[in-house]
Image (cartoon, rainbow, N blue to C red; front, side):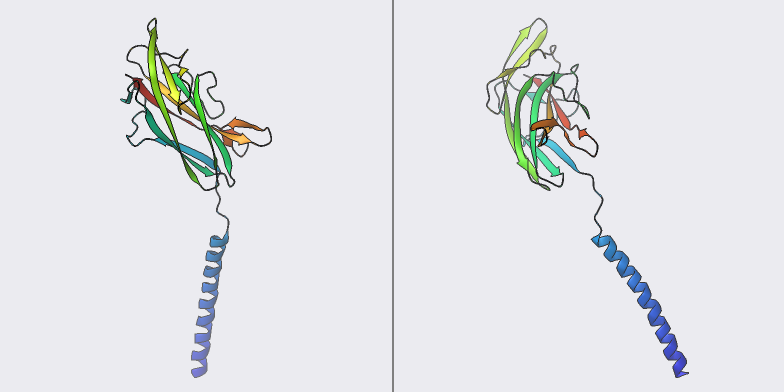
Length: 204
């Protein structure tokens, strides 16, 4: 009887041992395995006053002569350091926007800013812009805008009818060592991935 009990306990121990070993091995394999991920660079825009201009016909009004202090937040998840550049352009409701493959190079460029960003880092890039003045030609209003205290740039040929909104368009570019130049977007698995955002506003 004692022998049978011993054998029963031994069998139970072996079953538990094998089961726990299998569970432990599975957990260890999962913990040690590389997690699948997609490389990307993301960026957003904010100001301490808040932004309401992400949608068409927003109520973001920018007074002439008042400097706007805004900040880009750029996150690098490319598994290597990146040299990024953000180009600011101006458009209206009828001008083309960038897309996943093509920037809006036909729109007036207001300025640009760049930064080295380490892998896994979110960099905050402060910038300022000001509507220095506006002028009217025919029925269209045009703006003179400074970006990061550089000389003012005219929005021509981009103008708006009275009461219509302009929009700032920001494109993300990354430096390509092979070509020695900046490329629109960031390197994807098969091609560059375009990345941009816009803010609608009216001038007062």
